Length: 237
Picture 1: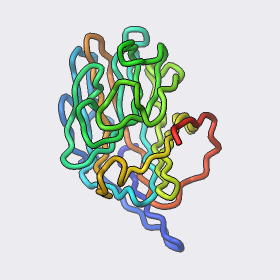
Picture 2 (picture 1 turned 180 degrees about the horizontal axis):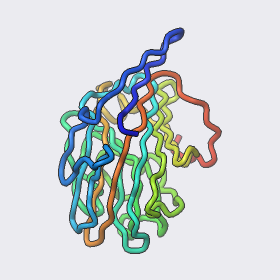
Picture 3 (picture 1 turned 180 degrees about the vertical axis):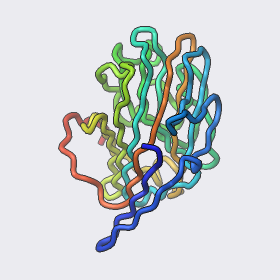
């Protein structure tokens, strides 16, 4: 879990190399922990942080990005969550609080793990996940969701996998190895204006309430996606 393992799948050859933790840029309140992960926010109000992989990824090719996330130990009073983000152009951190470091980023696609109820944003009562576009955090025109998920502010790491198949335009998200949400979307033309190279990273933020947010990367796999039996898969066609 100390390094990001990049696997490049070819028809007959498997080539791999390790990307060091230094291959990520840090922004906001983020810092590197003693165990080579990133802490995006402390348990402090109005904090925001993000990390970004320095090399853009080609969204005309399939890939799977696997990481571990920890969204804090406060359940009822914990906020606000994390967003896995794809963005074009120069990356930065978005707004604090309910913006979760994603609001204001455009063009972009964000996979939101939201742990705080904002009724004016049409949030579910429970912790929830959604696939959103262009820095909009209100759940009125999401690409998919929002869908409730089990409590994720349980002081534990959870496996998160982001899988993209350009052949079917399917963006699927797995939590703890189970598919929980998916959307069909033309990322290249529908979101990024024909630009195939985008940056990716993770943002987090707190507001009037707070939690500790951390992320550790497992691997980035480029090539044929693994076959997964979906447990929950709901998205807009």
